[in-house]
Image (cartoon, rainbow, N blue to C red; front, side, top):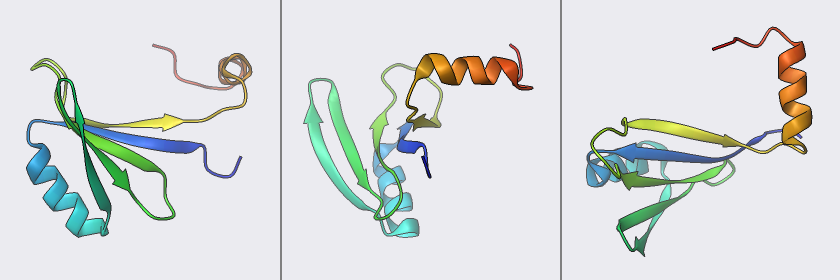
Length: 89
């Protein structure tokens, strides 16, 4: 697999400002999708992974980018990580 990153997602206090900033900076296409608890903005990043932006669902959720990766097997990937020098928490 050449690029396992398949989706990136931003939770933020200010989705409008984030859309303005990242849309302009990276020339991303953005599409708002109404959801039961607000709006989810789909990120269309061209050749890169797609993603989304949304308001924080609660105050204790950090403002952060969350990358999603695709693997053929979660169990095999976890086993491989355990055999390597993966950090332990």
